[in-house]
Structure formats: structure tokens, C-alpha cells
Length: 296
Image (cartoon, rainbow, N blue to C red; front, side, top):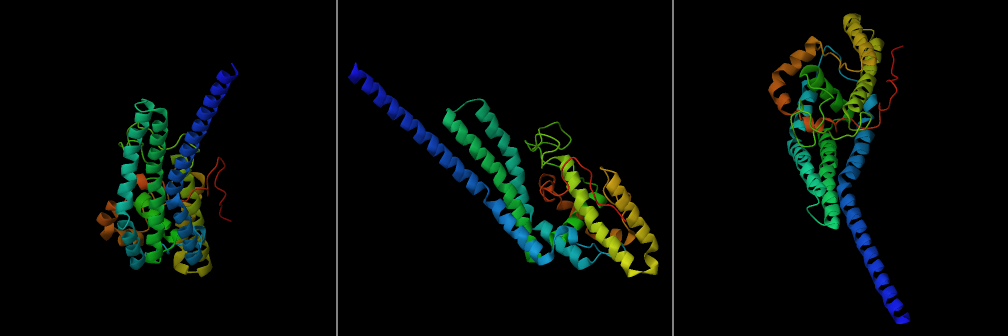
């Protein structure tokens, strides 16, 4: 009996150790996958800090006067956008491929452990291109000598105010049509990558930058800035009060419209719905409270 019990105990011990080894290997493999997956985000954080150190914070950028839109800076923006075609395609592919991995895991077509690896791999293949896209954008901005504030000013002005796109443009899990009923990438309206939070971030950063422009125009005491300053004040006020408004959506200042029109085709080609949600840095402007910027 003692011998039998000893054998049972030995067998149990071996089985438990084997289980712990398997769990350890799965954990290690998962860690390695996630570690590699997050490398792009770590690099994006570093280049983001380099951008801020070189060009200042986003909220410190002062947009150009409504009476001018520097052609050199606009062309730099276009070159940055055109350089991101590859990372954008990788991002689109990830959102198309991920649901297939999840569906396969849900159907239990493989063993439990292999299913876990499948899900880990699927998540990695989805998350990795996100960080790589942000890193590629930051790197392109550094190479172009353009800060993130200036970039986002042109981004909102061109794609939302002028071409009619919206912070609502966020990727679908299966890469389906934006007008369809496919699953979005977030679980709730207050999740970081939700349309609601994207709107908040757009309003937060845009209002901060336009307040800088308002202060600059006020300080200049330009006698011809009266109407332009009034229009700017009205836009900032409407942006602060209307959660669904993007500035100058009823028509850009004539000088800006004139500067953008010759580049319409090139700019239209550089917009990407899947990448849109990753343009506005998370954190700022999010939450259930309203945006706090106001004009004195």
C-alpha cells in the first residue's frame, strides 16, 4: 500500500511539475510575444519625446494666420503623409486578419494550448502594426523637421474641415465598410480608441492651438485682423460648446482654401480611415468631463 501510494505521489508530482513547466513555457512565450509586440510603442514613445523636445508640445503650437498658409510647410505635411503608405497598409491588413484568428480559436479547432498561442499571436499581429505606424509617423516628422502640433493642425484642417472626414473614422475589426455594422476595435464609448474619445482629443488639441493663434492675433494689434479675429473667436467658442463640431467645417478662410485647392488630389489620396484613430495622442481631453479651454 505504501509503495502504491508512493508511486501515486510520484506520478502526481511529475504531472504537477510537467503542468508547471508547460504553464511557465506558455507564460514565457506570451511575454516574449507581447514584449516584441510592444517594441514599436516603446520606440514611438521615445521619438514622441524627441519631437516634443525639439519642436515643443502639441498644445504650444501656434497655427498660421488665417490670411496665409505657408506652401513650404504644407508640402512638408504632404511628404510626411505620402511616406506613411506602407505602414498604413500593414495596419489595414492587421485589422482584416485578426478576426479570423479569433474565430478559429472560438471554434476550438486546435488544442487548448495551441488556441492560447493562436490568440496571443493574433493579438501580437494586431497590436504590433499600431506601434509601428506611430513610430513611422514620428520618425517621418523628425526627418521633415515638423513638430506634432503643426502636423495635427494640418491634419485636422485638411482631412476634417476641408475634405469632410471625421474623428469618427475608426477601423472595423474585419476591415469592412465604415457604414456597416461590423465590430469596432473598442468595447465602449469611453475606451481610448473610441469615436467619442477621438472627438474629445481632437477638440482638446485643436482648441489649445487655436487659442494660441487667438492670443497671437490679439497681441499683433493688426487693424486688418478684425474680421478674421472675430471669425476665429466664433470657431473656438463653437468648438468648445458643440461636441460634434470641427472648425471651419462651413468653409475655410479664403487664403487657406486657395493654398489647399491645387493639392486636393494628393491630399485626398493620403487619408486613411484605419490609421485615423492613432493620429491624436491618447490621454489628453479624454474622460466624461467637458473640455476646459475657454476664451477670456
